[in-house]
Image (cartoon, helix red, strand yellow):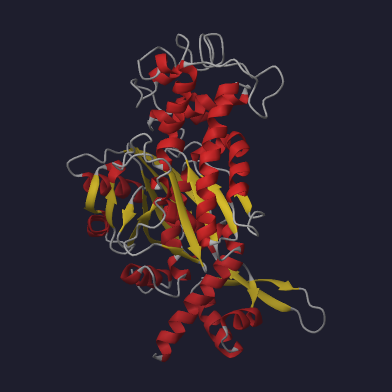
Length: 482
């Protein structure tokens, strides 16, 4: 390998180390990367000259001269992250150190005749609003589907109706910027590796719950993508061949039971035949009323309507389930989801407005569980049990250090956890039953931050997984590309 190539890789490795581990001294960098102290001194001097690395405080010494620590300069670059959903886009402007500089939401129809062109229009409109500050390194796009290669960006996403959609190609042609496209859960894992709990782990599992269920596997510090970029479709693990149909065309997928529509179907089934038995585990004494006409999900309670979820949801009653879009009405996420994502976007609209109605109905179910409703709590606990058994199987196979739970569903995690922990521990291989499960706070910008991390992680990737697009990002970072 040519000397200059070796230098480029080592510079990238230094950035990767500082980005994922944090500030280090030059001697620590040399030891971690197994290169000479003289090489580290030379290359860090160059990185400091490019404004990418800076000297920080002195590291305390047990004797001798204190070591100067080096860290990343957050303002050395920025990226635009885009999360694509079935009815809107969320976009965020993020610095190299993970700080969010701005957020936007835009309506979007993936079934439109020129959906990639509409996506490019939306991204372009936001880019015109970004002026001054760190240089823009590129655009990252997270999609709910499989992507052949980050640097190519051809998307297969059944939930969007996309088959071999050339998202990356169309965006690059329109924007004249590096563009990386990835499965949205894999993108979250990249962000977790850089800025979250994954910074201290090289092997971990990211689990997402919300509209659907997803997983990303980080092995030896890198996201495992599989042969065609489709690794991590955890939601389509079959848990019951005779179960309900799934959007992928199969039956009995995990997602069909514990995704948002699965939760609502379970709630309807239970409230169609209310059982005024004892409150579910964890319900405060005296608050675990069943979901009958006078209960929290019927009559004048949280979901309104005329008595049962079955009557007000699928049959079009007057409660929240009937009013929210996607379940026969016209609403958005509903008051509960808006409350759970309070941060306003730059446009002034709270995140969640205009999004699918199933999540809003699940938010209402969560509010009923908070008030102590026995059946609402039972729905979450049973879903948690199904999810826990499936997660145990995945943990037994990939052997992660920790499981990180993310997604819209984490707002109701205490009610999932009742069934999840018990089932997970029971099914884990002996010796793994003490694995940590860590739940992180969430709002919808997290998806878009993950997409931005695709670009921001590229300078930290000495293996060059992003291909030519990664090279272009690195070139922009050191100022060799206008």
